Length: 161
Image 1 (cartoon, rainbow, N blue to C red):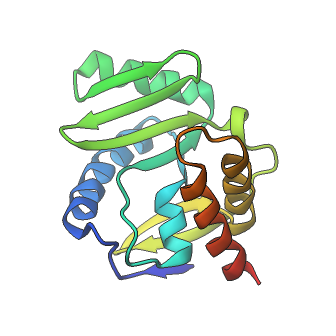
Image 2 (spheres, rainbow, N blue to C red):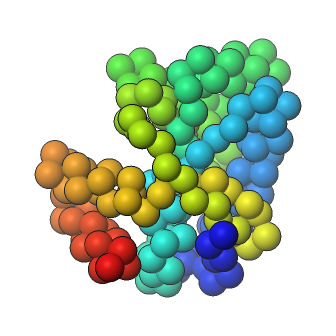
């Protein structure tokens, strides 16, 4: 298990984000949905880069679970949501907090995971190798943040050696 005890640069935001995550995770558990984290939070978990800011939590689940979660939140009017049709992604908002669900089928073929403990909260995340592959691809095709993705990739590659 990878322990994460220190906070990124935006500590207050991450504390609020984790409070929001706990609510979303409770809903997921009640619907028998088992999210896997990827993206910036897992980058922070591996890198421990205290100068980094985590703005949201990115999770992957099967598309059918995204649709089930979307329906539940809509029916119960729990949070503001946006479903992005072309990507089949579900964004769940609570004021300035964002948790995004992406379809695992679209992004991951051979899932490998690690267990993380963020501030006493256990989270399953994609493996370091899969995260490296994700940022390698993003650094090559990203139109909005290629330099940021390349920087993350270089840091992750150093960690993996």
